[in-house]
Structure formats: structure tokens, C-alpha cells
Length: 496
Image (cartoon, rainbow, N blue to C red; front, side, top):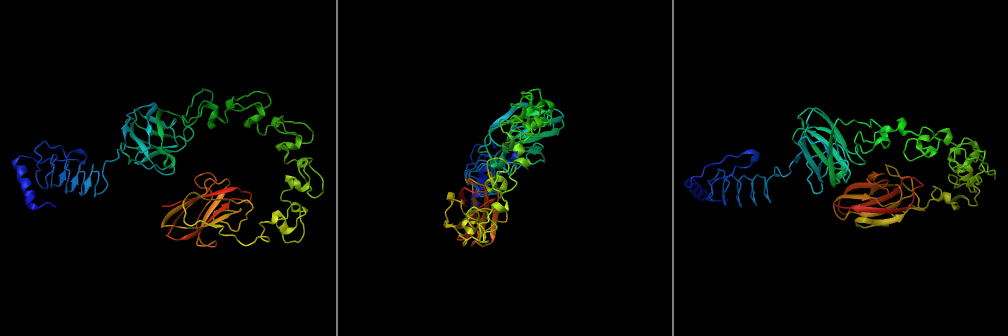
């Protein structure tokens, strides 16, 4: 802190030089000081040109102990709008929101750019959270409904509209995938001169190059299905738009004329429009003819799956009842039949399905309760390792001893893992080849469940996030969604 005597000296020098007080102007910054003598006008008096200053506010000082400073390189003051190191509260004005003023521009590509490296100024109500965004001020040139789209952008976008000329106005609309593919489309009805802020960002924090377009009077649906135009600017034209599914111009009206009536590239029975049409159905399943011309005759045609002539009606008579070349239990029709399953009767002492293997000697009994050995949990110990692919393996030939609260009825792989430090950890099965269920148990294989997930953020793989203390041991269970799910498994662990 500067001494009182030094302050008085500078004050007297300032008065002697004829310096006058300056008042702050718009934006919270002091107005420029016309003085060029480099001497400060004294404590409590603002000055825009001093190179050393004990005053309360200073716009140019290189070292300053004042309460507010708009330009200091090192500052302990209470508020600073431009400093590179500051012990005060967050700076005001570091993120310009909205950014560019687009006026009332209409048409294709009224704004382009990239959100990579941008700040997160606005949080939309849709699109799985916020992320870097680009913001624009736009003013309605007339009264009407205006539609904004991000078609042509290079990433999965989210588009929102806020009322007013600032970024804190009410959200009028928010959209994730209403445009072309994963691009966005949002509309607002405005009066002439109404100002809105358009916010472009990415789904779940994605970034990339964006294109923003604006149109007036765009309908919500494809109004004409043969005009060659994308009427609702959603990226789908005419019959490619779901809005046109029921339009006669987009329907295969004759399923046996050899023509692509709706011009979608599929002719007659190859077109889904003809599904169920008599011309596309195997109407007779024992006449030896390909009635629907799809290349499959009689029982070989899926149309005949439920026809009595195509079902193995007796799974223990030694006959090929449906003439498909597969007898009794070798026929898929007999799957689950008592005559074809040892499972459920694995302690009967007899070969129930007549395959020459009785009870636990039959592979169908491997995971039956009567044949299960001791629980192999945990299968392996991982220590406290983190990263991608910290563990791999296969559940083929394994059994299921437990089920998580969110599912898991198949064969499981278990791991013991210890947190190397306190914090939040995320476990996932991204890279696994089958549908997984992942759950984390505290301490032991019979411990309390800390988290469970079936389908996470990447397809049919799973993701669980838990907070652990340093040295806490958990059991990570990579389970299969169903008994028939099997393959190669991958466990990834990300730490704090």
C-alpha cells in the first residue's frame, strides 16, 4: 500500500498540472484522459493516462492497487475488464453475446463459420447439454413466420432462438435434428422489427463448421411431392420426405406392372409399399410355385412361416413334417419344445432330448442351476489401471451368476478394480461386439450396487459413472443383455 504522504504529493502534482476529473462513459470503462504528463490526479480521482496510480479507478496503469481497473496487467482490484491476471471476480464483457449483427438477412448461408474454440455463452433447452456456440443478432424485416436451418453444416448441430437483442431473453424455439440429417431447423413468428438471437452449437458439445440460413413463410411439411423442391427445408425433397409417404405420387400403386410407379428406385414387390399385397405374397405354400416371384418357393418363403404345411408339428416322430429337409429337433420349429431341450431337466438322470447326452453332460445344461459350479467372481484383478482397453476378454462359454438392477440376463465377465485416488470414474464397454449391461458393485461380488447402465452413449454398449474414495475397491460386471448375446468384450476406465 502506498503511503499517505506519497498520495498527497501526487495529488498536489496533479492539481498543479491542471488535471481535471473524468467521468465514466458507457460500458463501465473510464473515458480517455487528455492529460499527457503521466502524473495521477490523486486518490479517489479517475485518470486514463497515469503510468503509476494510487487512485480508485485507472484505465492505463501497469501496477495498480485501486478498486477497479480496466487495463492493468496485474491487479488486485475488485473488478477488471481487461487484465491478464486478476484476483477479482470474473471479468465482464469477455464473451460478446450476441456476436455478429445479421440485420434482417434472408436466404441461403446468411452466416458461416466454426464453433471450434468458441465460448459457451448460451445453454439451449435441447440437444443434450451445452457447448461452444456462435450467436447472431437478427431482426425481422417484416411480420411473419421465419425459419432458420443449419443444413450444410459439418457436424451435428443444435439451433435455438431467443427473444430480444441480448442472450438472456426467453427461448422461443429449440431444435436438434429437424433439418437435413442431424442438422437443425427452428421457426419463430415475429412482428416487424422484432429482434432475436440465433444460437448455433453442437449436440452434446460437438463443434465444427456451420452454415446458417433463414427463410420467410416456410411450411412445416412438404406441401408438394412432385415439384422437385425441399418445401419445408428439412433436407428431404418430394418422395424422399416422410411427409409424402401417403401421397399417391410416392406410392407403388401397382405391384405387378414391372414399373417403378413412384420413382423411388424400387419396382413392384421390391418396394415396401407393396408389403402385404397379394401379388407379393406366397399365397399357396404347397404348390411348388414361386407365387410372388421373389425367388423363394413354398415353405422357403417367409410368407409361409406360419402355414401349417411349413411347421414341424411333431418334434419326436422321426419325420420331416414340413418337408424343409430338417427333422424333429434339428428343425428350428422345434426350438424350445420339451422334446428338444435338456435345459430345465438337468437333474432328471435321463437324456431328455435324446441327443445322447444326459443332464450336465449336455451343453444345454452348462449354465443350469443344477450344473453351475462356484461363482468365479472376480474373474481377474486390474489394480488401479485406467485408460482405453484396460481389460479385454470373451463371455463365450461363460455363465451368468447375477443380474443388475437395469438388466443383464446373459453370461458375464467380472473384474476387481481399486481407485488409485479419490474422484469420479467412468467405466464403459465401448468396443464390445455384443449388447452389454454394465454395473459396479461396492467391495465384493455381493456388494451394494453403485451404478447400472444398459445402453450408454454409444449404441448397445454401456457406461457407468461413480464417485469413489482413494483405495476403494469395486467389482465391475460386464454382463450380456440376453442369454444369446456373446462375443469379445472391452472395458475402458476414465479417471479424474
